[in-house]
Image 1 (cartoon, rainbow, N blue to C red):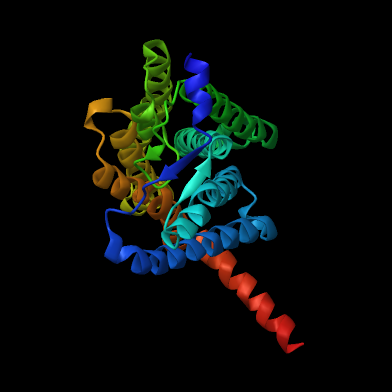
Image 2 (image 1 turned 180 degrees about the vertical axis):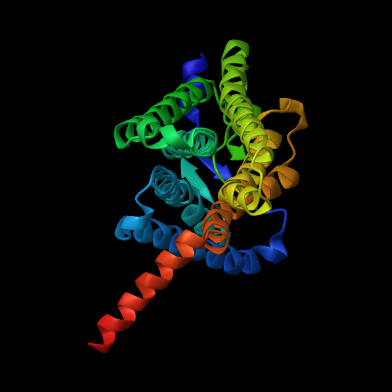
Length: 314
């Protein structure tokens, strides 16, 4: 009977920003500008790191991977959201919805784990500088990236399976601008308490454990920085962590509000605004923070621009 009810729903309607009817065109313009800024900024970072040998270090290797992940992370959500802002009825197929959620959660989990790995990299760099090259060798860094992606997409696949094996009995209006866990659980006409417990456990592991490990890294980093005798030395050590800290605070702050709270506290307008933050603002923050606050990236960008200017003159 559940299988029959589930088969009735072949597509979902995304309510999205229908609560702001007069703002859909302005939102389209603003989000389009933000999206192209995200793409441009992250592509510039990846290209600059790949082409400048001075940036071929573990820290920038992870940054390039994070920027690449952010490009795909936004690609899964934003183009579809922009299209839906111009449509009277925003629909997505059942399979398309499952695929979108799996991919979005996969890259989202991967980014959380990558930020944890970047925190560990900063810890080794500052607290164990003499062993840094040995501990953070290319092979180990590659394994950390593979682990991040594999774990992230394993978790997202499990969550997607639990959500989309629930019965959807004809109700197909999703109170969101993309397919996410909370609005789909709300839409289902039955509950899988074991599945919901597993989903919450995965969210807790990814968000809380990642944040706790980052926090632990920075406690050890702070302890080491305080032992540096000169003010200039302390400032230089902390400056290598500042960009990462800003991204971590915004990223984990937003996703913890969404994924670590009771199902009953879900609200369309509130969650939509918060979701805009971690789907648009955080990916935008990454290239802005790392380009404006990081002198190495600034120098590499100037060198790249200088080479381009010289090439054009020749």
